[in-house]
Image (cartoon, rainbow, N blue to C red):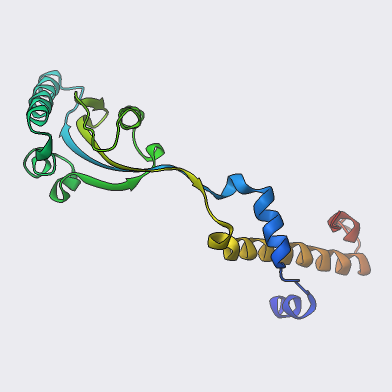
Length: 192
């Protein structure tokens, strides 16, 4: 009943095109897509607590690095037989990711690679040793207004609905005779 009353009594204006554009222009930083990278990797899993296993994993990763240096085109085939990652069946392909989605060591290694380049040495992370190939970089960019106008309209519409509902309820409180408790009235919910 309360929801039906509020829907009937509260008028929520829909945001206009110029309002959407103003919000977009004033908040461009919110609509920035981070740089994406497409990478392949070979993971030789290693637990740093087990020194002997860790040394064996490092030696295996270094041997794979030497093999890749001799034949860089073999990268897609090696993960199937040598990687301990679930991506091994896809040639080590991890898809599109942001560097923030990886470990700091992995991100630093990828940041230093050019497209088509593979790390010369294994990269140690908490998961073990990685050989990483950067397939492609997709630069960071600001999303175009047209691509996000509907999301902005939804956000502004919801914000207007919450504000209008709070104002309506505050007017009801203002008009009511309430004793024993202090409630914020319409003055506290005015839009300035």
